[in-house]
Amino acid sequence: MTEVIGVARDFSISPAGRRRSDGPDSAERFRTDFLLPALGTGKTVVVVLDGTQGYASSFLEESFGGLVREGYPADSLRSRMRIISKDDASLVREIWGYIDRCPGSKLTAPER
Image (cartoon, rainbow, N blue to C red; front, side, top):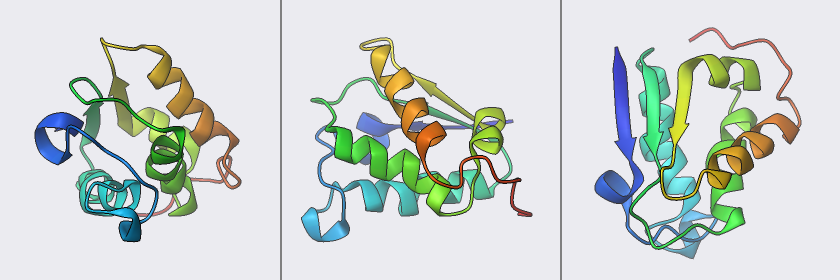
C-alpha cells in the first residue's frame, strides 16, 4: 500500500522557509504535518515534487534531512519512500544527497 503526497496538491505551490516561524509553507511544517505522519502509517510514501514554483535548498534539506534527525536512517527511508519529479530529476538526487549526508543517516531503523 502507498500514501501519495503531492507537494503542490496537498501542501503548497510555493514551499519556502526552513522553520515554522518563516511562514505557513515551511519545511518544518511539511515534515511534521505531512511526511512524519505518512511514514508513521507503515505504508510506502510517494512524494511528488512537481507543480510548485520551485524549491530552495534549505526547504529540501530541512524537510528530508530532517527526517534523519527525527530518527529515520537513510536505509529505512530508501525502502519506505519514493521521491518523484518529472519536472526536474535533479531534485530527487539533491534530496537523497541531503538524507545520505545527514549525521545519523547510517543508524539502524527505529522501531515504529
